[in-house]
Image (tube, rainbow, N blue to C red; front, side, top):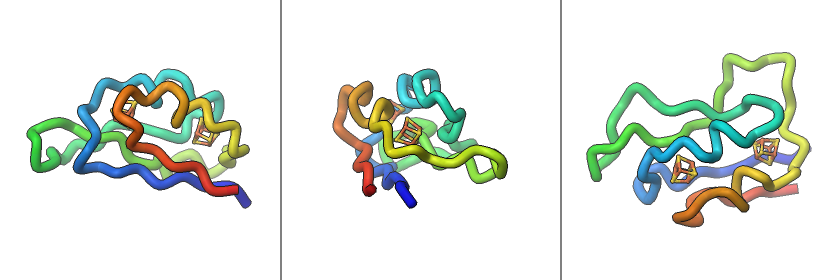
Length: 70
Ligand code: SF4
Ligand code: SF4
């Protein structure tokens, strides 16, 4: 099953991946990373949605923080 890994310490919290994931599987954390941003995290609340490995999130990330595994 496809899944993603997000490098939370590189993330600047721009929210592009949140906006573009067709499954709504990414959200911004309420916690801050070391840079002081709210980083993107996998949205485990979305129990009825599954990552399809489409890689839109990784393509949209300007800081190359997301790796997609298929
Ligand atoms: S690979 Fe596609 S479905 Fe999976 S988290 Fe990224 S945008 Fe969402
Ligand atoms: S697109 Fe990249 S930098 Fe922006 S919130 Fe998502 S992981 Fe972070």
